[in-house]
Image (tube, rainbow, N blue to C red; front, side):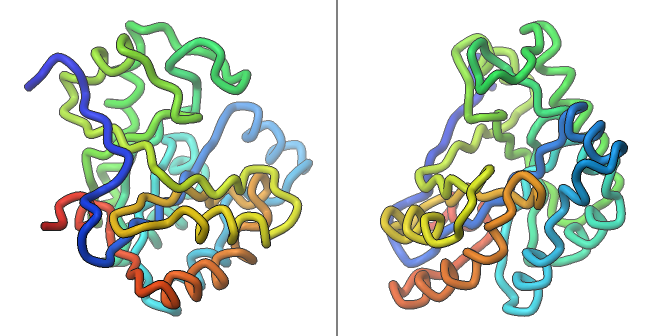
Length: 226
């Protein structure tokens, strides 16, 4: 085991596979919005419906608080053999300074936060991984050093859809299809109220991938492609 968690942006640029990844954020502020009725849902079931209907593999980066808020949806994800489960922290706090105004966790709490999230996800079974994504993709040497003992692979991504707080779906489609290549890791969100256009963009993204001869695959297969 090294002294720093490895970081990947994409898989080998060979073949035709790409990874569709969906972050499931959940903060205390988001939970408060749900409780107060200010938002309806942070779980976009239309995305799951489409992926299931089209039999499309995907990898979901889950926060622990999202899993605890949506246990039935988590069971649905874990029960699909085409879906993988990965770690996106417990409460979507920042692991560095100056990360999109997210509250910051102290360095000595980082490993515990990630370990706790794995324990929250573990009982759901399914295709669980040791992949981890930082909130906002914000990480530095201290954060990577802190996570090294956990044996995680940090997954950023080379195709950012820009779906958080988007107000139209067409820019998301362009953002993905203009940059996607073999081995790409596409970052999207399943947090409906904070990413309301993703389910509208997704059919067009899937069609565009087909036109380009690209095939969605689980992240683990994309990263280990020959």
